[in-house]
Length: 206
Image 1 (cartoon, rainbow, N blue to C red):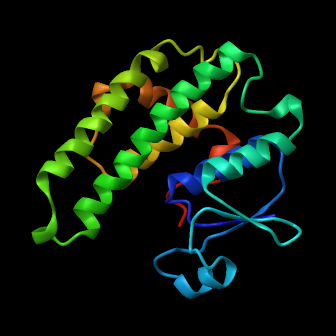
Image 2: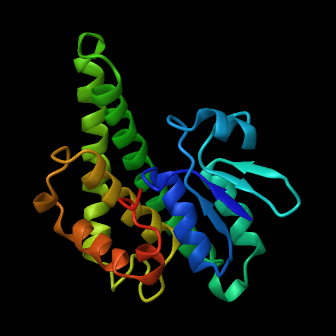
């Protein structure tokens, strides 16, 4: 398998780290949707990161769908989503909020760094920032209760995604979120970033 996309994308990075945690052997190709458009187009005409190229040549896009595929093909002992209904629902709840934080960080980045200053819409930027703040406030108590992970001793997809999103937020939009206001989230992310699977795919490697 080949994972196509840059690790400065939290969506690409969460797939890379999850695939490593699930025990997959794969090739990561750092192809940018901005700087390497024609190279990416030759792989996937949609120019969508992440793209997973399967061994039979098939393509999967969207990080959630890729992770669903990888999860179901993996050794059950290594899976990142619990089977028990209550635990699975809780992980999905955390995961959904973390993905909102990811989406809002990306939207804020695009609004402030890719859109010309005279075209930026302050009410939209403020709305996005408020949604991001709400996501962090919802996740901070869960991170404070982590022991050491959100569900207890075992890391789940919620931990991976939350840690990746927090690192992306702090790296790509410094100053947008004051880490001192969310110490538990910062601490959980730091624990995850010290793991071999995270170290193998650092956001600032590119």
